[in-house]
Amino acid sequence: MVQLDEDQRLVAQTVREFVDREVIPVASEMEHRDEYPDALVDTMKALGLFGLNTPDEYGGNEVDYTTFAIVFEELSRGWMGLAGILGSHLVLCDVLARYGTDDQKRRFLPRLAKGEPRGGICLSEPNAGTDLQAITTTARRDGDQYVVNGSKMWVTNGRRADVLLLLAKTDPDAQPAHRGMSAFVIEKGPPGLTVGRDIDKMGYKTVETCELHFDRFPVPAANLIGGAEGLGFKQVMTGLEAERLNIAARGLGLARAAFEEAIKYAQQRHTFGKAIANHQTIQIKLADMGTKIEASRLLIYSAAAKKDRRERCDVEAGMAKLFATETAAEVSLEAMRILGGNGFSKDFPVERFYRDAPLLLIGGGTNELQRLIIARGLLERYAVS
Image (cartoon, rainbow, N blue to C red; front, side, top):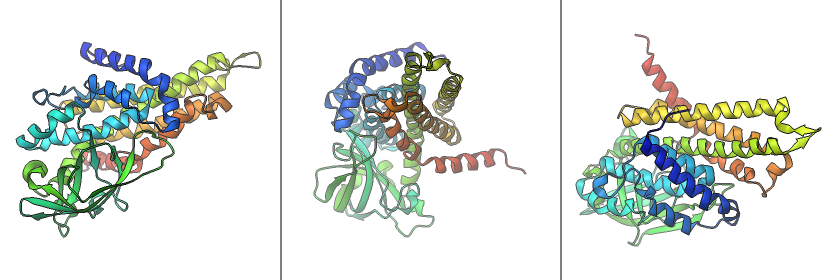
């Protein structure tokens, strides 16, 4: 097991107790009703979770990335939807804290650190997800403002968030395309922004995932992140590096939850005169599940430590995201098999874990993309001169 310091253990214990006491008893019923967890979100605000990566000077907590991962692991162990509500908000905070002007930090970060207003990110489009350079949303300068036109989809928190990170093209003709992309922090209010439908999903319920449409939506020029055009792609990619760590940690938390349900059930369920945990077939499953969960944790903490040292960690974050989320998908399926018919029933939480797991394979950059990132990084490191 990885050794945590006193502060990290305290955070882990605090979030774990919150999840055990308030989240797990209500998660499945609320998820089946697709009910938004307002009271749980209020508690998350009180715990300071919305300010996890905001600097102290702006009212946040600015925790290290291992602690950051611990929070997402523990939340996802109870209900991955809660982690989704928090995750997109923190990507916005991360980009602002790293690249925002002093004015932008002062205007937005203290409020975001309190969870009011809620934050989100507008990146993907109907024809541009993994390939963000293919976006078509534009932001054209018009005096002291930009005018935004286009559509975004898969916007987590899209209905409840009032402040959003927007990636748009300020120079659609730039080559390569990323040089013409800029990032903005936008606020709902002016006419021209319409929240479309909530996408009806197999899992990952409760947190809303919306389409947003922009029709001559005005954004103050002062909200161009960093104050310079053409840097948005790099800014967003850096934010997504942290998102991949949080998604990896979500996979770890979900896998833990599924494993714990399975190993408990295996010791209580009897067939052919003995607990199924005593059958070698079940033991082999449990051994593989437990091993991959521990390997996931080590990969995540290793990537987090490298990011804390401000070292490049795209390969490590990609490896952690790839392995931990594939583990979540595998462990949730194996847990369902161990529970048999009960694993397929809404009376047990395993069916919820199984429905939530596929999102992790896609979100934050598909696992196919992670493999390409990892391979390119390894080829750079082991280049033959």
